[in-house]
Length: 150
View 1 (tube, helix red, strand yellow):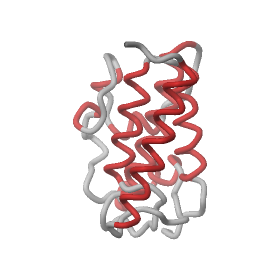
View 2 (tube, helix red, strand yellow):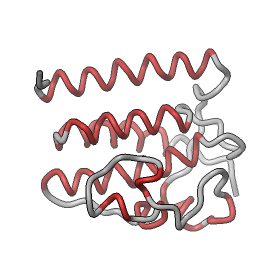
View 3 (tube, rainbow, N blue to C red):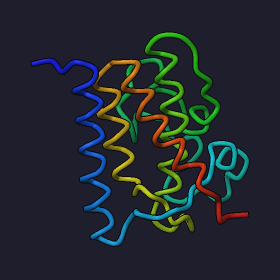
């Protein structure tokens, strides 16, 4: 069974809402803070639980060549055409959201790091540019809520 783009996007949104509700109930996530990819790229000493040279594939499940990128390289991801361009955008937003949601990060993030991993991997699995960009946009909005770190 394959999902069309609208159904896949809706499924990711529903799962995201369910996961954020569970995270809030467990005392993780549900916050209103977020630091941008630029912040994390320029403040390597603020990283908690993850390292800049850690490969993306140790956290997310992208295809080659993205799986061998480091988390720091993913923060430099630009964009571009097609699914590959969307994956670059998603990994950039996803790594920042991951760092925001990491326990001990000092950021009261909307999504826990576990929720971010699930969201990113579900979006990647669709292989659909519009779905990947929708999830990236959601994460980007949360990453721009205001960074409490200096």
